[in-house]
Every structure is written in structure tokens, then in C-alpha cells.
Image 1 (cartoon, rainbow, N blue to C red):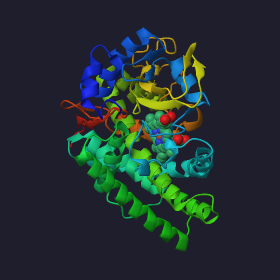
Image 2: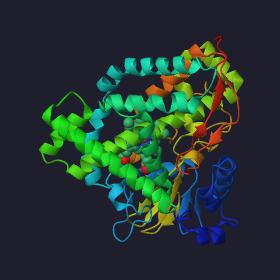
Image 3: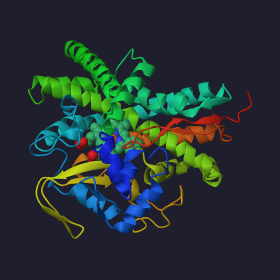
Length: 406
Ligand code: HEM
């Protein structure tokens, strides 16, 4: 983000600095060889950009679980984001506000609520795959990977009458701002999206106040009335749940389907035993996860991985590199859906561990199951195109042929 915002700084710094190269345009080349180079330089690598990069599973985990590492600077401007009004969500809060708000959001993902949703997720997956199949060749991103999580999260939040393409456009504008805002055009798109979500959720809160239901938004409105949360925090939380709910899962389904189709023996294994779908989900998360990095700021001088990080140090945490660390995963570059489970950091770790992980796992499981079951002869039908984002890794298009007899 620091780099992307300042082309001159970047071009001066990039020569010979793998972190700068990584942050500039990872969609042009695979980030994985760059991660390997960074890991070979050590577990914590100082970059010319003024930050430190955590490269191994162990150090990424240690940074994420250390209570002295926050997501906001204790004072002064935030090097991680200039759109302050967008930053009221959980991801950008430290305790005590983070603890208070996370407690309010957690019930949305209770096992009982998710179990009740499983049947609807399955029928949404069936419906989307069925429609797409009728076209013979289709774009898996547009027709399955994107609409599935949007329909699921709008069902969870009980949002009715939403226009999926508009939601997708606004969600993508907000998600791209995770990389920093690169100019007035992007800033306008982000502000438009922010205003649209603000209006949508303000309306919705009012509706649920008048007629509460058994849904997450009604619960949050109740908490607001008890003065546990301000109106702005509430809107920010709903927006995070909505956007985090589809901007990441779309990439789990897209990256996963691509990996499976590029490894036909793995696709065949899944087809023969759909019970492998949950371990396929874990392998995709480890091997080519939707969220490649996060960042933390040292609130105090700390020692991590035998190195002193001075107060104020900005640490880039390479979740994607942790997944390919040979010290944590044997033969880490091999994509193998039958792998014995080993801990990955694709959902982060510590205080900000992904709240939606059980939901994302369920969606990935059902998407892979339905695809393998209904479209056993699915093949690639063209070159997939990568999204131009850095923190999030995923595809813009994934052309496939269903192989089904029309
Ligand atoms: C946080 C990944 C799906 C809601 C996070 C973080 C990661 C992540 C890496 C923490 C970032 C950090 O530590 O700085 C993913 C991936 C997903 C996924 C890879 C899909 C495969 C979802 C879904 C939802 C969701 C479906 C909700 C519907 C959240 C929320 C947080 C979060 C609310 C903030 C937690 C906090 O800051 O305390 N996610 N996520 N995520 N995620 Fe997810």
C-alpha cells in the first residue's frame, strides 16, 4: 500500500527489494517464487520501504498472536489507510473497541445459525451450476463463484431485493481499496460504494427496528438500542460482514476450481470421493489463499523470531508465504487435496482470526462438491485472467466448458 501510493518511491526501492516487487504487481507474476526468495533471506526481512516482512509460518503466527502488535498506530497518521471514515470496522480496530464489537458480531456465525443455512447454500449452488451448465461454456467466476457467496451472505443478513451486479461492483471497489487508493477515479468509486452501503444499511436498520426478525441485523439493532454500539459502528460492521462475506469466498471457489482443473488427478480424486471436499478447501486455502497478506504495527518494542522490532515498526505479514513454508508443510508447492491437515494461516490468527471461517468453509465445501458431482467432465476453456489486486488474490474470469451433454 505504501509503495503503490507513491510510484517514485517504488521505482527507487524496487530494484533488488523483493517486498517492493511483491507489492507492486503480484498479479503479473506468481508471488510464490518471490515468497521463496524472501524466506531464504530470513523469517523477518527488512525492506527499503521502511517496513519489515514476516515470511515464515512461525513468524507470521507469532506476529499475529502478539498482543503488542496492533492494527492501528497509537498516535499520528495511519500508514495503513487514508480513508479514515472507512476504518471503523473490526479489521481496523484494536482493543477495547475491537473486543466489544467482535463480541456483537460473533453470534452471526454460531453453529446453529450456520447449520440452518446449509440447505439453502446447497440449493443456491445447485441452482447456479444448473443454469451455468445449460450454456455449455461459461465463466465460472461470473456464473458461480461470485453469485454464490453474495446470495449466501445476503440470506444470512436477510437482505431482500438486492441487485447482485451492483453489490458485486461496490464490493469490488471497497475490496480493491485494501491495496490503497491509487487516484481520483478509484477514490470516487470507493466513496460511491461507501455511500451506497451506508444508505442501504441505514434503511435496513430502520426497517428492522420497526419489525425485528431472527436475523443478524435485528440483533445488532437491539445492541445499538442498548447503547453497546454507535450507529456508525453498526453500519461499518454490517458493511464488513457483507463485503468480507463475498469478496474473499469468491476467490476460494475460483482459485480452488482452477487448481483442481490444473491438477486433473486431484479433480479425479474429488470426483471419485466428494467427501474430500472439506480437505480440498483446506488445501486451496494453504496453497493459493484468497487473502495473501495482512499488516500489524508494534505498539511496544517486542522480540519476535529472535529479532527486536522497535515500537512503531510496520510489519507486513505474508499469509500466502506461510502456506508455502517447508518448515510447516512437507513438499509445500505440491497441491494435494488428500494431505494430512496442517495448520495454515489463510484465515489469519489471534485476535482478528476470521469470524466467517466456518461459513467460508461450508460454502467452499458445497461449491466443490456440487461442481464435481454435477460436472465431472469440467475443463478449462480459455486463459483465466487474474484480478489486479495485491492483498486479495483471485481471478477476474475463469472460462470453463461444462462437458455436459446438452
Ligand atoms: C477477518 C480471511 C471469509 C468475515 C479475516 C482475516 C482474514 C480473513 C485473513 C483477518 C485479517 C487480519 O488478521 O488482519 C478470509 C478468507 C475467507 C473469508 C480467506 C474466505 C475463504 C469470510 C466470510 C466472512 C468473513 C464469509 C463473513 C461473512 C470476516 C470478519 C473479519 C475477518 C468479520 C474481521 C475479524 C476481526 O477483525 O476481528 N478474514 N475470510 N470472512 N473476516 Fe474473513
